Image 1 (cartoon, helix red, strand yellow):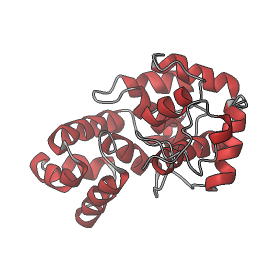
Image 2: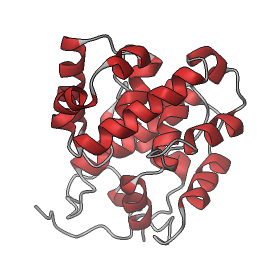
Image 3: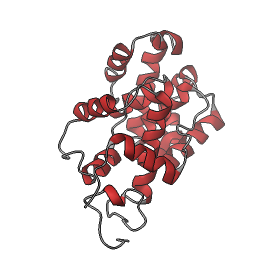
Image 4: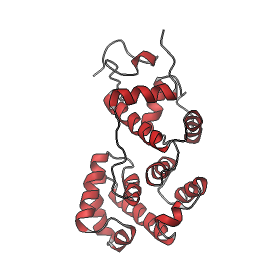
Amino acid sequence: MVAAATPQTVYRTLLAAHGPQGWWPAETPFEVMVGAILTQNTSWRNVERALDQVRAETALNAEALLALDPARLAELLRPSGYYRVKTRRLQGFCKRYHAAGGLEPLAALATPRLREWLLATPGIGPETADDILLYAFARPVFVVDAYTRRLFSRLGLLGGDEDYETIRRWFERALPDDVALLQEYHALIVAHAKHACRARPVCSGCALRACCPSSKPTQVS
C-alpha cells in the first residue's frame, strides 16, 4: 500500500534527498527580477549566459538597461531565447520599475498590491510575479510551475487541471509563512523534477517512490 504524501512530508523528503539548493543565484534583488523575466521558456544556464553578456557591457540596473539601444540589448540577451520579445519585456519592466522609484518604494507595498503591480507589467504572469515576490522581495508566496504540477499530480495531490491560483492558495494554506522554506521548496521541486520526476520518470531510486501511486516498478530511462 502506498503511503499518502502531504506537502510537508514531500518537503522533508526532498530536502533529505537533495540537500539545500541555495536558490535564487543573484547578487541583487533587481538581478532576481531580470532573471525571472529571462528564464521564461528557457533553461537557467541560458539565462546565466545572457546575464554574463549584459554584465560584461554595462551595469545590471534599470537605468543602464534602459540606456542600451534595444537592438544591442537584444544581441546580449540572445542566449536566453525569444530575445527580441524579452528585450521589449525587460525594457518595459525597467521603465515601470524606474517610474515607481525603484526597489524601496515597491518593497514598501503590501504583498497583494505588489503582486498587482507586477501582474500589470506586460509579459509578467503569475509564475514570474511570484518568483519575483518570493526571491527578490522575500514575500511568503508559493511559486507554481510545470514541475510542481507534474510532481504533485503524480503523487495524487493534484488533479492536474487546477488553475494557478487554486494550486498556489492550496500550498500556502498547507505550509507556514516561512520565506526560507518556500524558497527552498520551490528549488527542491525543480531539482527533483530534473533528477527523477522527468517527463519520462526515473522511478528507480526516487526519494518519493514510497508515497507515489504513479511510480513504475522499474526505472525508465
